[in-house]
Length: 61
Image 1 (cartoon, rainbow, N blue to C red):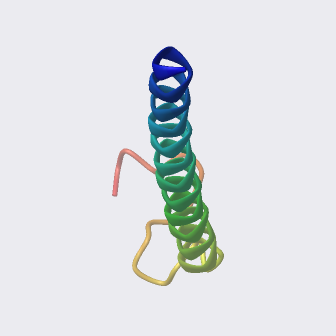
Image 2 (tube, rainbow, N blue to C red):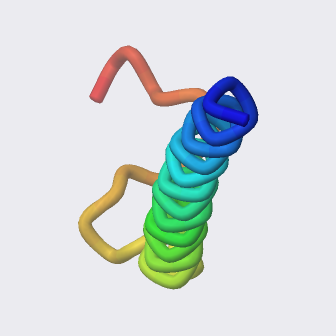
């Protein structure tokens, strides 16, 4: 009977640890997704006025 109680306590602790790890993983995924979406929004204006034009440059200039 005591062994059963110990086993149940150990399983509960492992279950709690797995739940915490899973929650942190989901939080990190959400943060990465938000950062990726924010970067996509700011990069959507590529080719801004201050960037040099693409293509070969004239070496005489």
